[in-house]
Length: 266
Image 1 (cartoon, rainbow, N blue to C red):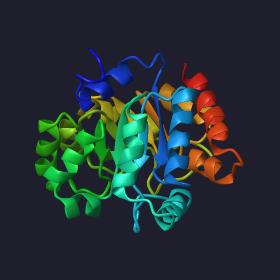
Image 2 (image 1 turned 180 degrees about the vertical axis):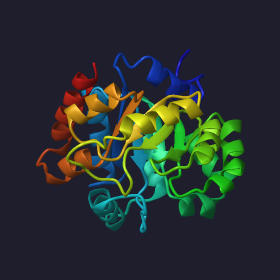
Image 3 (image 1 turned 30 degrees about the vertical axis):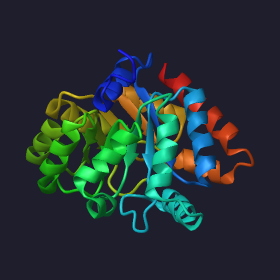
């Protein structure tokens, strides 16, 4: 089936199933950082390096889930004039090569309305949506809107999520279940939490979609360890955003990093 006839949710499922790796690799990209064109070049480098999907962040003034590296990148993107529409154009270009999952905070979704926001995603070829600050209790309406358009609404669970809530979130997961490896915000960690295997086991028992792990994964060894612990997908954010911020040639730098992580997952 071609990407033109697949729904977004189907594209995500195919990316996990056909990655050729022990876990699909999903780098995070801050849309508009350092510029819109620069972020597109970084996203293309992710694809060149062996990424299977990309998580595309929309910069926001109050990113509650993000640590200092991604927060700073978002601030610079906003200062450079990044908008939702501009970031979606980056997503449209990248969607020609791999599924794009948009990460947007709830205010950005609510201000446009669920229907209008979902239509924007469809128009730009976006496969999935993550809204990290959308409470479970407020999710059913947006889930219905996304389901009607084939967009995967991806929820998050954490080590602190109670079992009963785990089950409810897992039942509603589309595309994949985003499992946060640690408590706290995004950012690099020295080592993965020893409890990761148990959290992943709880996640897999709660849902029928693949389980991807993010937060704190910054090296090829950590990516491999996440796969060893049972993750079907590995999400890498702060390490790549930091590399893009520090490098003279951001695209070349992140391509090498993504390639190393892809190799570690094969």
